[in-house]
Image 1: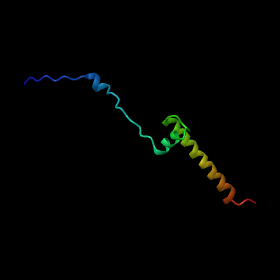
Image 2: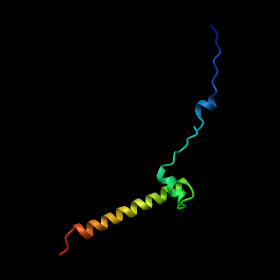
Image 3: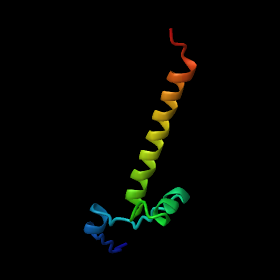
Image 4: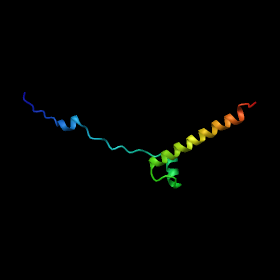
Length: 70
């Protein structure tokens, strides 16, 4: 039985990258639509900044109103 088997080593050693499409969140689309960012990456930074600002405001409110001062 003589069957010939061939392998294309370049394809098996270094597979090609798959095309990956990243979905934008609704918030990222809103930030872009409002003109606060030009692309999805900038929109993510804007959203991160908004989240950090909200966290800082929350900590301030906890400190200012819930912790008794002498």
